[in-house]
Length: 310
Image (tube, rainbow, N blue to C red; front, side, top):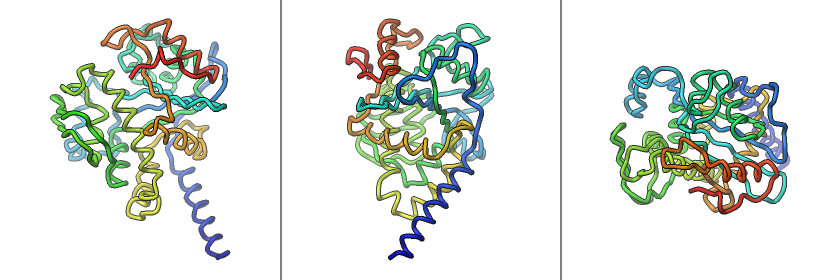
């Protein structure tokens, strides 16, 4: 039994080391004049980019990723979220920042928030988010189109209950209502879909679906059915490092802490919300409500019900 226990510990340590040195890194967090000071709790900037790195032409067609040139070139972000992990008993918060939000981008005037990623990559996006929210970002995680789909397929799909039939007129991806397992293609369509009768509020509905899916994905990855099934665990172990990009100062134990906190999304253990906006276009934030929201996160206080948007 002692030998088996030792072998298991060595196995886990090997996996840890493998992940630590295999995950891609980028300089996303940098000090600058006027940067918000670190406050209570820990803040992650989570980005879903339109990167097609590692995808063949056949993959792009199968996943309906669209054409980079047709989209205007450069990289963009379909998903921008801040995950706040408190230092006290307050619930963690997963906050969506609509990609069309008009904010000040350092050195580039006022523009849509996702333009910061296209103009200056992760570092400029992080600085833009910090300036708009007043929150100090401690960690950074990014996943692209191809990596997202591969992770979903690696664990055999993700179980989701879809309320309404979803049919995207842009990607031609259709998802029937009901409880089902979404493969990589359908999952990518689900989190990107906004041109559908099931998403009448466009990006505001899309970000809600993104948060729902993250909760289901994290719960399924952490389940015994994935971790104890070699046909799911080893493909996940293989695809994970290629799919994920983190800040150069981040480590696997930081990522594990995020995953543990986000497991509570499906069970209501995590506050999920979008930044309060003034209209369905989601271009302008409600100044008073958004300030209350950001102040609560900065102080590790409960987020007031009056500013939660779902």
